[in-house]
Structures are given as structure tokens and as C-alpha cells.
Image (cartoon, rainbow, N blue to C red; front, side, top):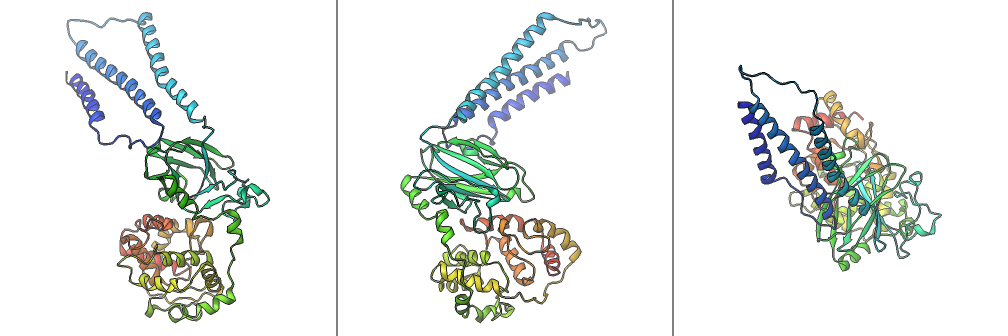
Length: 450
């Protein structure tokens, strides 16, 4: 009797939880309401079976409970009952599968008027490519990926010269415009998913997959990677912004074409030396840094990272937080560099400087720090030399007091919170793995040994 009551309670509680649960679909923001319908059909079919089976078990437990006055009758088979169960099961399976097949046929049937974009995944970030004025994208090959050609575009294919490159985790789309998304991976399996659009698809190295959808609501929607792609998988996030066509065109015009990126000067170190004179007042003539002036060492750091940080300071991505005292000092200094050419020149000169060793000021457990650093090493390298492919700067040789301050700033949201600081968002998540100041000290003590 008690078991029968428990089974009935299980059914009632499960049904109540289903209808009263706060965890439900995100608000639909695309044309794929049919996907919700297929899921709801599955819920109804499986829900009916769940209720029927458990209530039958409860009835059987109660109705055929033990009694001294009767014996169980042995019935090896019942063809009529088996036929009914086979038929009902087949009907239920068909009811679940058929709608999915119909929707899948629509999911892979891209409208002729759909715009085309490419989403590129790599550990652990997204970037995007859009066709230029010719409406066609050029050929790509992962073997052509380099620091100056991060998308791997074939320079011999004229169709790719006007391709628009979005080296950012954020993509904008015009509302009510069908879009076909081509998916390409540079390294391992990833999965592109936007819950509000009801679309997701794997990115498989060596091939190009796709899906299509029509965004129907303006707003900002998070891109998730739903394929375990490595230690920083949880940081691989992006954003889709749906807006009116005028705003979309303005956003699109702010990004360069492939041809324009190839025309950018790598920087003139000789000219950069002259412009560096003002930087040397704090950072030192040889880029050795100055702890008294809160200026970290710069010598030997990658020019690509230096350029990004200078641009961040110049545009307010970094140094705008009210508690970032020293970042606020850097912002006007970066503003002295009037254009990209000046930034490229200074960065080229700084990266040519011989790195100077910094005196250790932090003491911790280096052995424990070694274990903590295994996570950092995935991006920054086992020797802390950095990795341009993963947008990870060099750590070896950097002042320990500066590293500690930056990690604390990430933990406190002083750095990395700006909407355009794509890589800072990742660092916030990684920095928060360190649970207390002792772990900070242990980690940095180990980095001092690199």
C-alpha cells in the first residue's frame, strides 16, 4: 500500500514540477518555433507514457498485493496485449520522430535570399567573416592561418580580398533577414549554440557545417560552445546583436576587409623609438619597468598584445573603471598616439627591446603554484612565453607585483568587464579559479621561476 501511494505521489509531483518549474525555454527570438513544437510533442508522448506506466504499477501493486487466500496465476504470454503494446509503442515513437524529421528537412533547406556569414571557432573564442560587395566569400585553408592571416584566407582567390573580417566574439545581424551560418573550426570540435534562436551545430575540423535562421527580435543574445573543447571551454562565449538594418550597416563598416588588413604596416621600430621617449619616463629607457611608478616591464612583450592594450586604453575598454587608478593614468598617454601607425611603431620598438629580469617581491609555495599554473599553461605556454594563436601574452619575466594586481583586478571586475574586452571576460572566469590570496602568491611565485 505504501509503495502504491509513493508511486502516485511521484506522478503527481513530477507533473506539478513540469508545469510549475521556473526552468523552461528561453524566449523565442527566431523563426524556429517548430523546434519548440517538436520538443513539446516529445514531452506529451513521454509524459503520457510516464503517467500511464507508473499509475499502472501503482494499481498492480495495490490490486495484486499479497494475500493468503489466493495464488498468482501463471500466464506466459498474451498475444492480444502484446499486439496492443507493440502498436501503441510504434505510434508513440512515430509521433516523436516524424515531426523532428519534418523540421530537420526545413532546417537544412536554406532560403535563396539568406545572407551568408562564417563563424570560426578556436580555443577559446569566436570570430566571424562576411562577404564584401561581391556577395561571395573567398576560399580558406587552415594551413594558411598565421599572425597576419588569422582566418586562413587564400590570397590567390580574388573573391576573398573584400571579405569583411570580424576579429571579435560579437557579431551583429539585421532583424528579419534570413542568414545562413557557415561553421568552421581551426582546431578541435566546437559547437555553436544560441538558445533563444533554437539553433546549434557542431564545428568539425576539416569540414564546413551550417544552419540557418531568421532573427525576429532585437536584442543581445549569448553564443555558447556546447561541445567540451578543452580546459577553458566554459570561457568560449560570444554575442549576437540583432538590430535594424541601418545600425547593422554602421557596425559592418567599422571592420576591415582582408585586403585592408594586408596593407597594414607591421610598424617601424626606428620611428617608434622616438615616440617611446615619453613612455620611458615611467617604463624605463629599456622597458625595464619601475615599481615606484607602478609601471610594469614592457621589453620583449609581443607587439600584437601591446597594440591591443594601447588601443584598449585609447578607446576606454581599459582604464575607465573608477577603481583602476593606474589604468586612468595610461588612458591619456595612449591617446597621444594619434593613429594606428603610431601605435604600430611604438609596439614594434618595445617588442624589439631585450627583456629585463624583474626582482621577485612575492613569496609563496612554488610547488603548489606549479600545479595551479597547469591551467594557465594551456594558453600562456608551459614556459610562460605566450601564444598569439590563443591571444595569450607572455608572462615569463613580467613583474610579479603587476601580475598579482591584474589578477586581483580581474577577480574584482575592475578589469575585463567592458563589453568590448572579449579576452578580459575569459580572464575573469579563469582568475576566479584562484580561491584566495595565498593561491595568487603561490601561482606568481612559480611564474617567477620561468
